[in-house]
Structure formats: structure tokens, C-alpha cells
Image (tube, rainbow, N blue to C red; front, side):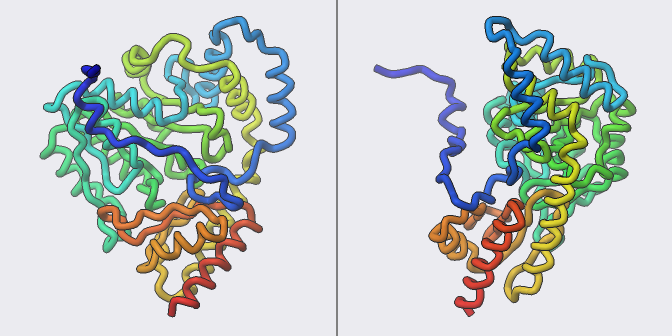
Length: 358
């Protein structure tokens, strides 16, 4: 028996999310800590009062109202999704739809961009970033590239994953002013460098959308909640790509509680930033390791024995992200910030490996 599925599905690689239960898990850019105690207590209290027999209407609206209000926007400027990943996928879907439609993004960047482009049956077009230039984006060259390709959508991850680099707010605005198509700014890591966010100028640019997530700074990766900020007309049209009741009440209530109590997360965010700076400083002392400047909750570095180092750390129960021989990322490693104790453990393991490899 044969199945006549869409041809594009055979072209899409599977995204492997099955991972080992690492004693030290610093490979997925997650927050290394669970919810702050006060937030967890409030979440559990609210969850105990949920009407499980009802569809999630008022909870969705409550969260869009809270988010909109915090940015000086209306609820209909806010669209929620199962993580910012689902929102990005729907944006690709909305602006894709044919091989003659292009979606441009700097590369290397979020690994799902080319996959979402294929799923949307659009042509994903990468603007290559160079390790020699520390993976920094030249806005003028990028604009020239976009004009040459004439895409329906441009996507920029800022700060960028996996390189950790940030594009200045003024440069993002410059790009918004000079591209004649939709522009999505993926701000999944912006809580670690909030000064470069473009949320306050969003409505100046009708072509701009901003995607954010609760998975990183808020530590709600398991709840899968993200949101998009955009003009009312854009929210309306992208929203049509979602099914009714696509968000569940458990996640909505949890995210709403965390957002309402977001000040409780500030010490944790500051701690992750502090740990990243501490680890960067220590790694820079090690011969043979190049550390790129990061503005996120992770470190990005290059080491000519990256694959062997990854294998050695795995043998010690430490999970990091090695890119192997991936184009533009050969011998690169990304390490998320864990607790101070966890960071000390993996740092020592790295130092011991390098010393033994000399």
C-alpha cells in the first residue's frame, strides 16, 4: 500500500528532539532553573481552579491583554503560539506558498528557518555570515542582497542563535526602512540584551513583526508559549493560519502568571548574563579556543578538536551542542548557561581535555 503525501515532506529533515537525560544539560539554550518559588506557587494555585471542560477563550485574551499593555499596544496587536517556533512557522506559511516566493535570512541562524521555508513551499535564501567577521551582519550588504533576491519575507534572529551576535537597534530600523517586503525580527533571546529590542518602534514600520518566546528567560520551555507583536492587520492575516483553540489553558495560565510576575525573573536573567561573562572570560584564557562575543544565555566558540571534545564531555554526562562539520559552523560549539556549579564542572572538563590534547 502506498501513501500519496505532499512531495515536499520527503525533502524536510526530521528534527530530532529525543535527548539523553544528561546530568548536566547545557545543549538546548534552556534556562537551567525551574520557576521562582513564588511564581510556581501562584501557577499551581491558578491551575487548581481551571475549568478543564471549557475551551481556552478568556485565558488567551487575558494574556494578549497583559502583553499588549506592557508594550503600549492593544490585544489585537498580539498573537500567541506554541512557542515562537510555531509563530515563525505560520509566518513562513503566510508569506510562502510557491517556489517563486523567496524567504531571506542571515546564515548561520536558527536551524528551523530553512525547514520552515521548505514546509511553506517557498525558496529559503541564506545570506552567509562569515566567521572571519565574527558572524556580524553588515546591514548595507544585507539590504543589497535582499533587493537582489526580491523576497516576500525577510527574517532576522536578534540576538542570533547560534552565534550570539546582536544587531544594533539602529541597524534593524535601517533594514526595516530599506526592504520592500515583510520583515520578521525573531527576538527569542532579547531579554538578555533588551536595549537592542525594536518593540518601541514597531508600529512605525507596517512591514515589521516581532516574535518572542517564554522558553528562554522565563524558563517555560515545557509550556510552549510564544507571541508575536505586529499591526492589527498583520496579526489578523497571520492568525488565519492557526486552528481554533490552538493554545491550551494550562500553558496560557502558566505564561500569564509568569508574565504578570516577570520582575521575579530579573535576578535569574542577570545571573545567566553574569555566568556567561564569567565563562567567556575563563574560556578566553585557554589556548586554541576562540570565543565569540555573545549577547544571549549561551556561549559560542570554535575549537579545532570540537568533535572530540563533545565526545569526551558526553562520556562525563555533560551535554553540549557541537556543530561538527556543518557548513559555516565547522568545529563550533554552543554551550548554554547552567547553574554556577554546573558551569564550573563543564569548564573544568573542557580545560582538562584541552590540556591533555596539547
